[in-house]
Image (tube, rainbow, N blue to C red):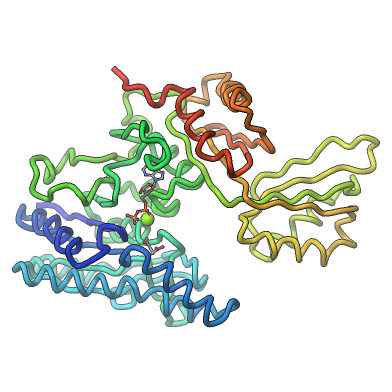
Length: 420
Ligand code: ADP
Ligand code: ASP
Ligand code: MG
């Protein structure tokens, strides 16, 4: 007998029929004798609708009340799944974040989980084999109010609960059957990976692959949670679905559990980036701090930064990217602090995309970046900015070339080829 956490995303619980299908996955594991905690997202599209209502009520709104509204989607699906399981003869009870409680910090709208008390859930496993159906995405902040974990946060709820109850496995059920070499919606020739290392999954997620929330991968890595990404759309009773050691899907694991390491593992992309250029900035010590300090204080996430070599030693150009949603805010802050920042003009542009090439093998192979630059040039795609780290290269391009760039890079590294 084992302890399992099963997480189901929005498309997997999109209506009552799909919730019934989810219940069959849960029942299969219960019938095999396992103790099961289930984490659910809101029905597909629900959270977007709730966020939209908050904005409609007032474009600028209290983050605590935003949390009160957007956390409600998960309450509905948790209750519906508990009802469905009960109707199938499975002992089940729903839990909201505050009931467990899942304790978070005070950053409403993007809270971090600090502590989870799993004792009641475990006691009910032992006493009654009761299934815990937990609303993902939500917790209880120190101000005693509901907090949400940022978009995609149910993945993080699931991994954190798995760590708290010392689960043997955490299965993230979604609308694809694993982690692919790139988003299969953009490149149908993308291949599913049997395994991917924590480090690479962390990069893929933070560079735009939304299949897992970044924080969930961090938690899985730190707490060594055995995490699988798998499909909820397969027949719950098909052969192999209940395989304990090797369920169908992608295992996120340590690097040394991967036998054949590729140089490049995957391609990720993030749309809706914006670029800001400050022209003829005074070239003196402290200028970068004067520009980026106020942006950081306002919570604007600055990503790629390029400073050009100054022609005469007195003036330079500073270009950087921010999420398009922060462009107005960033521009206002910069205009307001123009006297300290000492630039001539500010230029900005939205609608850009960052494409990234990821692979641990890059640590020991040269020429990976040059291959990307050449391939994009052959397609006539202009590169606006580049950043690199040990295991990734990110390239900023015009948004209209997003799909072409992803497919081009995916093919130039042979990721669409079936490996022997
Ligand atoms: P859920 O609602 O189950 O949480 P998400 O929509 O958050 O599902 O994440 C699943 C989606 O992630 C897939 O439908 C797919 O389009 C997208 N995706 C992006 N990159 C990848 C990738 N490398 N592998 C698999 N899916 C990816
Ligand atoms: N429902 C939330 C969202 O759409 C959380 C999640 O699905 O993971 O962001
Ligand atoms: Mg998700």
